[in-house]
Amino acid sequence: MLKITTQTDGTTTIFELEGKLAGPWVQEVENCWHRAVTDDWQVTVLLKAVTFIDGAGRKLLADMHRQGAELVAEGCMTKAIVGEIKRGDVS
Image (cartoon, rainbow, N blue to C red; front, top):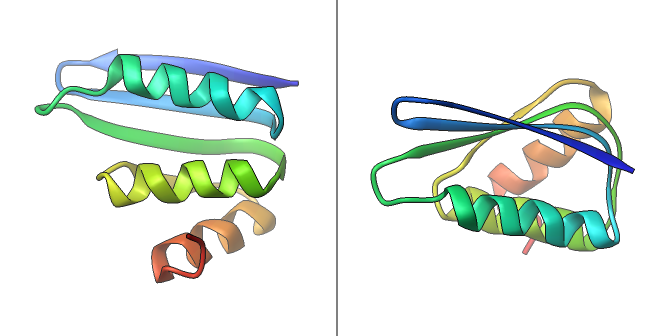
């Protein structure tokens, strides 16, 4: 299960994720992201209370990061995964 909370203000969209970024939830986050993305808007992904990220979830976060999304992590696991993505260790 994954809870996705979306906040939009002016030129920024924030996706706050809580739960497991795995299985069908990866596609749901990707769909939300594609609906929200415009050339002028900044996207932030807040991994607030994420308890698990599968390979597809890591790949999606890496794709989002490469396309300009800011990844913000809370918690040891998500901080480590975001660190890997920012270093380019996840493709």
